[in-house]
Amino acid sequence: MNWFLIVFACFYLAEHVLQLWLVYLNQRHLQQHAGDVPVYFRDKISPPQHQNSIRYTRDKHRLEVAGSLFGMPIFWGLLLSGFFDQADKWARSFQRSSLETGLIFLGAMAVLFYLVSLPFSLYGTFVIEERYGFNRLTVRTWMVDLAKGLLLAIVVAGPLLAVVLWYMEHYLHGWWWLTVWLILAAFQLLLTTVFPILIVPLFNKLTPLPDGSLRAQIHRLADKVRFRMSEVFTMDGSKRSTHSNAFFAGLGRFRRIVMFDTLIRSLEEKEVLAVLAHEMGHCVKKHVQKGLLIGLSSSLAGLYLLSLLMDAAWFYEAFGFRQRSAHAALFIFSKASGSFFFFLEPLFSTLSRKHEYEADRFAAEVTASREAMISALVKLTRENLSNLTPHPLYRFFHYTHPTALERIAALEGPRQPGNDSKQRALG
Image (cartoon, rainbow, N blue to C red; front, side):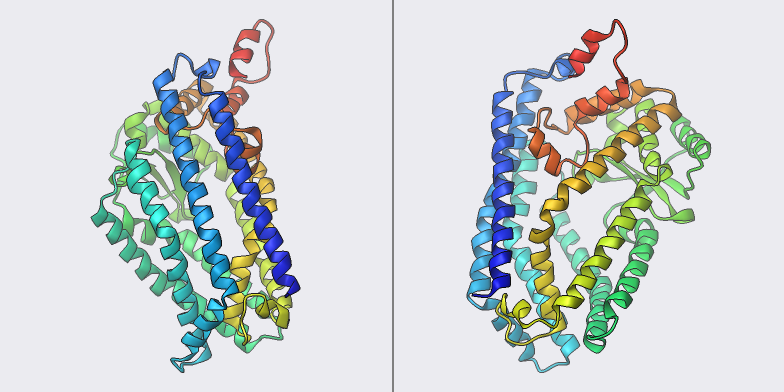
């Protein structure tokens, strides 16, 4: 038995067992707290709304477990049966260049694993999200989005993948990993710049925020914190979902603030301003730059590691490949790396939660109104059916944002004399 396959199987099993155990803990924690709305929310979220949020979380967990239990035997059945090597032979049967063969193989694998996950994605959107009143996506819109996504993959991702494969094949024993990383880094920066201008409008309609009080306050706030932007837009997010969101995208003078139309409808003007101040805080506090740096550093380390593995016969044999190739190496690494590095997820989640606290404090300071940020958090928590009582371990691994109670407690500040009752309510 191939030793790399055994090690990978151990990490894969550990990852999925841990995932299922965390879901079990969270489900049990939900059940234990099902009868009580946390004290702070008792006058803000009704018991029926709380029960609805519990059912929503439970249904999403059940779908997650079903997807995992369905996908695991399929993946290992394909691996142990030698399917991947047979698919590689099929791609080679077209007798095209090694570059074209690699694109055929990787494209076929992408389609295969997309189809495996598709039933669960559709069920999540058209059954669970529909059941709780969130889904606005029609089958026609879904199909149009799928066609556009496929076109983008062919036009954008395809050529990029071809460049990566070409460098891997022609400079296998050189510094290809560094060249590829520089290409990927440049592409990522370019995509980040043009994303709000070229990509977002393909899927959603962006409308400049009309002149008025909200627009004027946003511009004043941006000037105050020296947040460079080109424009403020609303996006027809309600076309697909009733969930609310806001984000900024782009770099430098191409940066745009984008707000879902659902956000403007559900929040008061001062609350919208607080949410946008929070998003600006991520930029001013350089969270975006730090995230980009971490991502680029991770990809550099990954490519270097792949360069060390590509010459090893056992690396290919673990997945049943009889012929070495750049596309086989990329495929193996993409499928194996997630399990090997899964246990780093809490570190990134912890850093992300730290950044959210900092952005909340920034919003409260620059708007001089922590109450607006708190009331926005309460409304978004209620309307999005957020889980009020996640299990601490589940939160530790998976939550990139602190819970609403944690964020509100942080905004309320340290305990003050004579304010014990409020602190107990927050806790």
